[in-house]
Image 1 (spheres, rainbow, N blue to C red):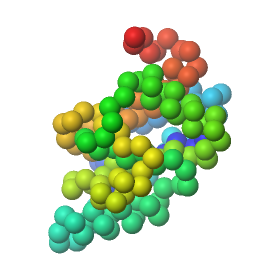
Image 2: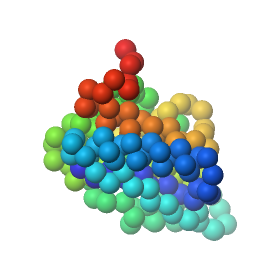
Image 3: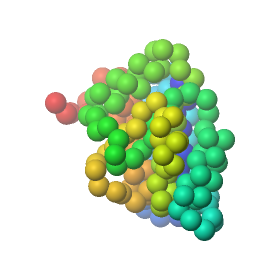
Image 4: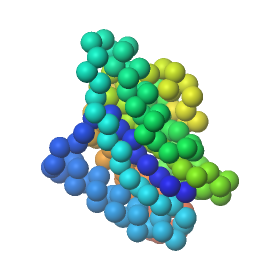
Length: 160
């Protein structure tokens, strides 16, 4: 199953981008034997529309066109919070069900369009707080790497 992170906004070169790359490189290496591939980042330019509503509409169209067919996970502070093992088991179940891809979608400064969130298979929250997209990407990349370690029985994950 192909894993993709689709994000509105581009990360500049620097420690945040390097940290995302480090975790995704680890996920790529760990995912090979698990049937998890890709771990690519799709970056989309923020809309220049005049209102937040029209920006979210433009960005939702661009996101829908950019992500592969399969599971859509919208990251939103109003979403469901789950633990790392439950997250890993969910990804493993999607893989085992033969889903071709899972796309994890991070909105722009205005967030994701409500219709896009409504059509997502899962709306996931890392916290009820709002986080900058750079930090969300880092946290997501780490959790995807952690997923590969949990599914493979690697000792990296030492949670309950």
